[in-house]
View 1 (tube, rainbow, N blue to C red):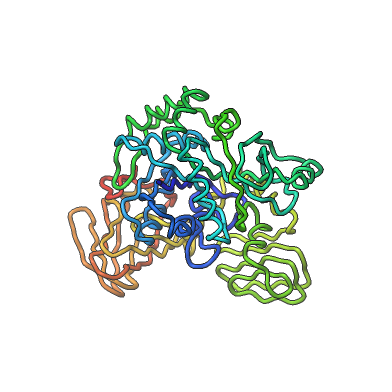
View 2 (cartoon, rainbow, N blue to C red):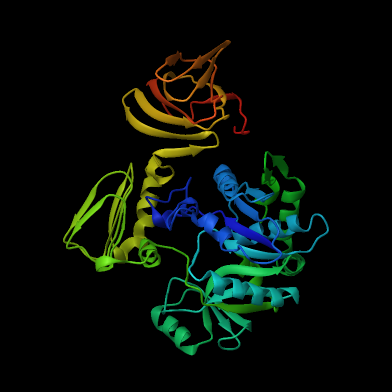
Length: 466
């Protein structure tokens, strides 16, 4: 069985912690490991697992690879989607990849950003699903509802409380309808998790979405290896319809089976659901970071960089990061997407990036900026290098804080250590490399008429970036 982790989401509903270039699945919201890592860790002990397949966007590829390395998972397959096309093309491509060597494994489809509190119950459900999938069923995991939630789609089962044929998939209901669903006992929340043989999915796609399947075959046949990634062909993949697996197959097939799952599941789709998952403590508050409260209840307060004090409020969400602060009534947190949409419309960087930006060679933190200058703290991993590059509009000063820096500036190569510095004139080809065994930290002062990240002309790059 191959776990297939779908990790293409942008996570805007948890802004400002979650952003386009580092969405919620790559954040450590519950403990030391990220939600993406926890998705794989909760499979520990499931028998006969093959290395996982990850389907993600091109811009998230290095975060995926690094977080897999931290888990010491051997030989994962990482499929890069050139454009977003929803779950059906992603699953189709994963199934085609799984059968390339003539095998026909079971595929366990998981989202990268779910919380499952009861791992034992989850693994029991996996074992039950396995029996059904091996018989040729398309298995979906139906979450036993705990309330009449109007934010989820529902699955209607033929029978109550047991593994059953699916009668229907239904859209997100209004409250009275949701209450009827829950009281009936044969409706489940649609989790978006599945299990089936690769061949079973492909045969059903051939019946119900043949054009989509053809496009995915073309995308995989013309895919290019890139370091540890498989880069799907953009022309082929873009031909596939942007459609969920529910619409493409599950609502049409007669092979759908639902396995009930009662394991403390949550898709963490809002700040209020994060408050629920985190387990409120004193006065029903959830607190992270440097926080001081007085007469505050039923609230989520998160400090990332500074002291946050809250007085005399209830049912609020306060989230502070290095470059943004959000204050919201807890019952209005779903509307954070409106703020993100306005940020995007205004071209504000806070919609896409944190101040701390991760790169395959390390990270940088934009600690100050003004008219014609910008200051960054740059951290380079041992043995890593930035690209050989030049800028049309800015010069740079580098000061080594710790570690050793090898600096290439045109034909000159210089070795710098702590408290030493160098100057990179505008228009000069240059490169920064860490030849040491410890991280290299430098302060970079940029000056010039334009300081945008798109003023980078790359001549050589270890990570095959444009």
